[in-house]
Image (cartoon, each protein chain N blue to C red):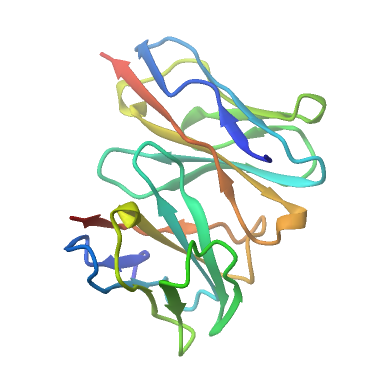
Length: 114
Length: 117
């Protein structure tokens, strides 16, 4: 079945460590790609998005993601995490053939230890 | 309002009861989406409105689920004869243009947590 896969469900890091969260999808055509974040007790917020152009996209709060078409991947990175980055992170894909639907991964819970 | 507002925040229903969940999108937003998020999972698409027109309801899991947006603003998701498997967080999202585009991202509400006992 076509899907979005996030490799780790739980990640624990110390402050200042580097972060990389994996996201792979299985849709073959044109896709738009997103990362959303949900801080404890808050609503889902958009971190960054890719529609076209430079495959390295920069988002808010120092996050970036790289679209690698050949690997069907859109991994999220941050060079140095902070305690305030503790949250759940969702990768989402909007395949062109699906119209306006976003298909979400299962999420990765990140805990940053201070 | 400043964001997407959903009510109630929490709802407990006995199996077999009907429930109605409300979504107030950001004022002027054309598109409105409903998603269902089961525990430990990502949100799953239920249905999509552009103004008052329900353009996609392919994600509604059964005919017990019904959504409406009669005046193109507030939307209600109704679940009839609730079952335990309906327990989930129901998320509403809106965007300023038709659908999802680069300049029109989705804005999510805090969701309604439905527990069916």
